[in-house]
Length: 237
Image (cartoon, rainbow, N blue to C red):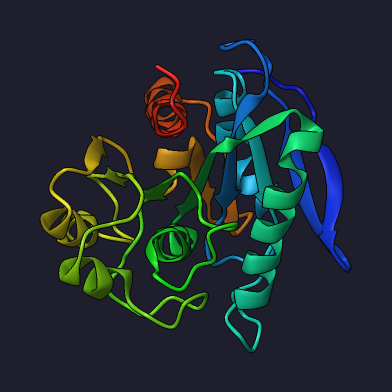
C-alpha cells in the first residue's frame, strides 16, 4: 500500500473530489479509471483513502468524491455531478475513458450499480463496469428512483457487475448481496472474512464515530482483495 497524497479538486460548486493517480505502470498509456462512492456518512471521501491508494498501486486512476445522503434529494445531484465530472475530466488526469468503472461502498454501492445498469442512464455517462461493495440493492436508489434488484431481476445488466461482501458484516448483512447475485449469477462475487468496514481496509472507531485506516494484517489483506476486484473490473489482471 502506498501513501501518496491525492490531489483534491472541486467537481461542483463547493464539492470536492480526491484524485489518486496510479503509482504503478500496470499498462502502457492511459490508466483505467475508477469512480468510487463512499457510504451514507456525509463527506467521507477520506474513509476510502486507503483502499483507493491500494487500487492506485495496481495501476488505476481512482477518483473519490464527497457527497451527502442527507440532502433533500438523497445525494442524487452530487453523485451525478461527480460522475459527469469524472467522465468529462478523466483523460486530463491520465485516465482511459474506455475503461471506466463505477464503484461504491455501502450506500454508495447501491447507487453505483443503479446508475450503471439503469436503462435511462445516458450512454456518455454509463460506465464500462460496476462494483458494489458491501451494499444492499433492494430499495430504490436516489440517483434513479428504482431498485437495482428489481430492474436486474427483470432483465440482463448492460455492463459487467462485480460484488464484494464481508461475511462478518452486521451493518449490511451478506444476504443482501446474495439477493442480487441470485438474479445475476454470472457476476463475480467475492466473500471476504471481515466486517462492513474491513472490506474497504478500515476499522470502525466508536470514539471517532467513523471508519479509520486499518492496521491489523487480516483487515489490510481483505482490503487488498477489494482493490484487486476494482482492478479486474477495469480490465487489469
